[in-house]
Length: 500
Image (cartoon, rainbow, N blue to C red; front, top):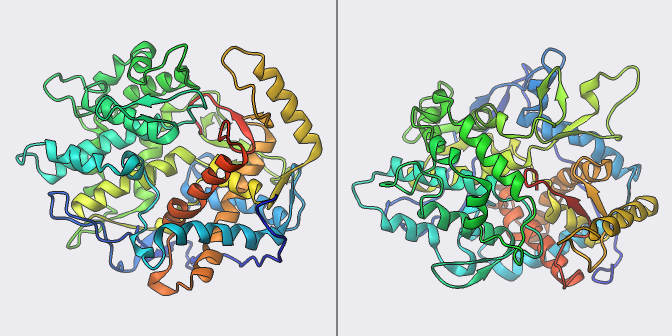
């Protein structure tokens, strides 16, 4: 690639902390700097946590579906593909490790441009930042509109309502869709456009069954959200098409059904009621502030939302795994069990975890143990960074196949016809392999980036901070320079609105 010089890249190993009994110890927490008061008197910061023992991963030999649905499996299974990547033995990509240092240097340049000498001001990657597009503090402004009689617990429930729906609607919108804010008159696209659209729909009561309380999401309200109504809220038209409208509407319908589980979502069927479930959970440490473990948050989302994903997804023993796919780089053959060739990502569930922790931390000072279990998000901005810096190159046969698919797709009405880019289905082995190596390289980039920034100990960036200020942002900006007409990633996926 023309933007980068060929240098020798140094890749550092990444390790886990596991006790001999299979349990894991965590002293990590989602870390971000103190924030300006939003009327709650709270700030979003987390001092060091006490030693908290995390539960072990499910045993795949006993319950492979439970294991592949767990957060533990995401990094553990993707490592099989990453090991092959470091040996340049991938099926679909050539790996040039001499470009690794260039990639890390580029990420550092983006971080230094925006946060030099103030690295602790970097927020964690989460939906909150998308709501602030254009520098407008929309979440704080929303909080200010609610009367003081609404306590912090209910304020947090309402934000969880909003953030959960907004994240689930945050699949790739395509290059032709945009949203014009009814409040500012400004136009936004992509993730920021979807964030602002969902916020304004939330305030208008699109997701609520109670006309006297529009600012909530509940099961009954979602059951009335038709595809036509959702399209109206997102300002979709023939002249303003969005990718995956039907898939998004189906996701909202299934979410309404999933919220009928009163054990997690309460009798009113609100996402925000998960706050009460988490605080009262036996694994939550009662301290000066509650300490919730990531496996508890994860299981709440995976079990509570498992039914929202399409039934056509990969299954093991009849159990749908969600965002998990077979991959040719995984163990296979007569010795391997069927579950062993599956690599799980659970991107939207991880995006939910990153996003939902922030309002709970900011408003209630809740802390989270085990955040190191979460991975970098395996999606097209982070993955695109690796391709656009030359670290990964799609092999010739796959490039030809992807370009042919793009041309065939371009014949359909409303599809992209400029800046021809290889195109693949979400379950294509190219996409699965690409996503798996993205997880591994993001872990390695975090180590290298902290080293280049000279940060050590408690001053080091967390993975969530590097995603926010470096890799995700850098991947998007490289796409804008490399493909200025569409700003698309270097590899496209056929999206149904439920994965990316």
